[in-house]
Length: 104
Image 1 (tube, rainbow, N blue to C red):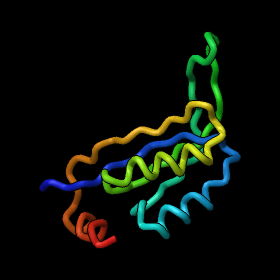
Image 2: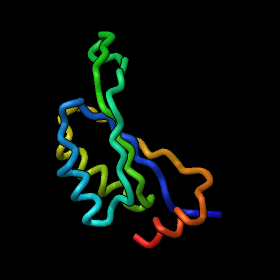
Image 3: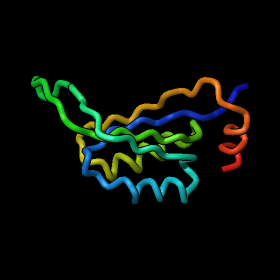
């Protein structure tokens, strides 16, 4: 069944306080659900140097047409120069979950 949902994945420093952004996104009905995962280790190149850092991973389940608004909110609050903000298409979704999400 066709749907309009995606997962927006973002990594944040482990000490970043997600609660204010999460509350805003939920209250403004921009996000359906937000998951904050435990610490992950990221490896990447920055300024020609191999780096690694401890981060937390966040998944925001949202309707596709909200991506740009969510991206703007994240960019204003995120401490990184180039934060990871990517949309991952959802494949199959259970009908009860889809009905719940579409009701938001």
